[in-house]
Image: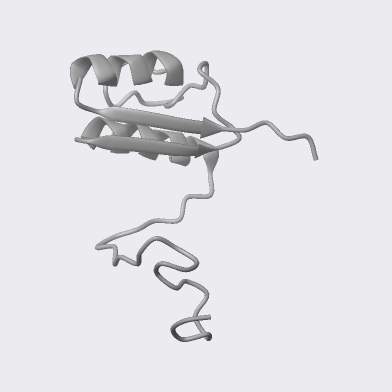
Length: 100
């Protein structure tokens, strides 16, 4: 074991690298999560990486107030929309459906 064994995250051993974020948020509510996801993807310039088990192309991103009326509101159509709008945007989705 290299580095300080008191730390779980060790660059090159247990993770690729460490970086400091200028801001972050913890989102618990599903509606708030998908609204924030939509805004983050609309702001993305290079890469979108989605990892999880609850992604379905028919998910509505906003249920009450639609903040971007020109963009589709279901996940599948929305992802198609953003890559057509920005062809240099790379969208990666890792989805799994494991029965526990």
